[in-house]
Length: 61
Image (cartoon, rainbow, N blue to C red; front, top):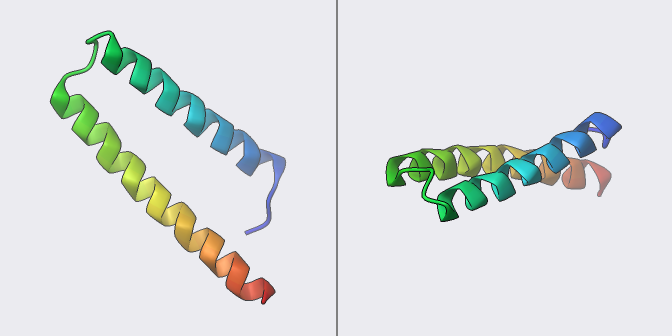
């Protein structure tokens, strides 16, 4: 995977989503089950990203 402007934008959007989610949780706008579902999804996405990064690092070594 090459680092492109699209991948950088996706990472920024992901960070903004997490910040927005944290703010909504602080305001009580999310239930515990909502938070659990969001964190589970984020964990899956992070695992996918980690695999891509590890593959790219292995390719370059």
